Image (tube, rainbow, N blue to C red):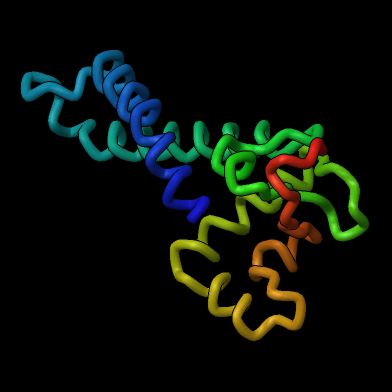
Length: 135
């Protein structure tokens, strides 16, 4: 549920980023068609970088994304500490193939602690904190 909520919230800012990138790079019909593939790859890298930056910033120093806060979820290390930038970046990078291929969620079904594959590899845990409880 948190992933669907997150996708809905990020759709608008990513759309603005695509517009700005298209305006700056000139994705028009009159632009050089030989550079279209390079521009497309640049857009993909820009969006990926923006998403990784958003999640790494959101998961460090005890912060959480709005959907996580709404649903009472908190991301911690296996030892129970707040995530460092390195750990958050590792989790974000590992989550991309894990989520896109569905392997992470299949792993969670059979994992003894119900952890996703990217959480297990990054050494993180997603815990439930009641919404009305101060964290």
